[in-house]
Amino acid sequence: MKHYDLIIIGTGGGTKLRPASDLGKKVAIIEKEDLGGTCLNRGCIPSKMLIYPADMITHWMENREKFFINSSSNYSVDFAALVDRTTEAVTKDSRSIEPAYEANPNVDLYYGHARFSGPRQITVNSEQLTADRIYIATGSRPRIPNIKGLVDTPYMTSREALRNTKLPKKMIVIGGGYIAVELGHFYGAMGTDVHFLVRSEMIRAEDKDIRKAFTENFSERYNVHIGSVPTKVSYENGIFSVTVRDADDNEIVMEADALFVAAGVVPNADDLGLEHTGVQTNERGNIIVNDHLETDQPGVYALGDVVGNYYFRHSVNFEGEYLFAQHYGEAATAPIAYPPVPHAIFTYPQIAGVGVTEDELIREGKILGVDYVTATNPYKKSAMGDAMRPKVGFVKLIAEKNTRKLLGSHIIGEKSSDIIHLLIAYLTMEATADQLLEMIYIHPALSEVIRNAARKLVVELGQ
Image (tube, rainbow, N blue to C red):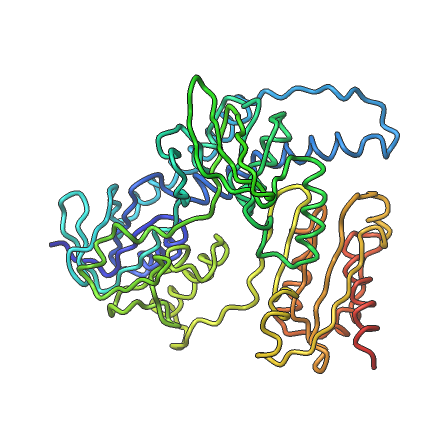
């Protein structure tokens, strides 16, 4: 049995622990697929490389007449070339990781599926490994809903949708979350007739005002079927037939040459041999950790999607950096303290948020005793926003009434994932609404829309 100082299972966010090798620690890294994890190979990076040209097309097609640009409405995209270029780029990045590991005398890389054979013992490719500390960063995978006939059809998940080189004529999307609206938008902008089957609400974790504005605008562009539940799927002669119970309780059959399942994710914890350890999971299958990210098995830690505190690459990076500082750096022993965790949805229109939503305050306000106020300012009520002439776009701010402290910020519209960083900083510093007005904003930058929202918020808060 080979002994290491630490074993890292998963080469996504878990590799934030790899620098321990630079301190002389012996490190084993285990990966069953491509190096770099989901974000690089099957998530954040390739999806944005595809969505960016989709945004360009959508913005051009929907806005050229506003700016008196005379241009034909006809355009064509070499879909296969775009997907191939994206695949080649991420494959090149993924393959560049292994030489760096091979050049490091303190790192051993194992390709294979890791399973626990004891409390701190791992079996991979018939080899037995043990370590002082083990870090589980195995991520998550697409959730496949229990729909009759689905598993017998060649449906796509995000994994296949990102590498598919044939543009469908018509696509049915099962789901209305961020993966559904990002990749569904990509295919729609490329020319596919896209239909979303949404059980309750689109992007339901977003603030209610953002959710409403997005659904209205997105539904003008694509076919959104709210209250529709797929009950059966079949596939014959290249065509999917999806039986749907619609919002009026009618049973209809929809047909398409592509079916994209985007019904959430499940943690990759069910085939790790955790029964041979003291590691426990919850009812959703996520690994249970304490506020030091340690499992019920001493010396075994977990981070990222497999834990499920947050499902973002930037959050698992934060967790990995925390664990490195605690175990191999000079940080004083302390529980993990998350600052406000932001997010963005890279669809059209783009969405970004940080802090609480108004829905959470309405639902939990009586328990928390939070008396709050909100203020909203449209993009059009700023110089740059007016120049852009957007159909939808606004900033929403939420503050606690007594302390005037910012509690949440939510933006829908172009460049929202960029301008939200001003508000991420202010929420992280626990700033007040008044402090948003103590800085000078560049005129006429789009960020002035935040200043204008802050002015309204201060008025709502009163003196």
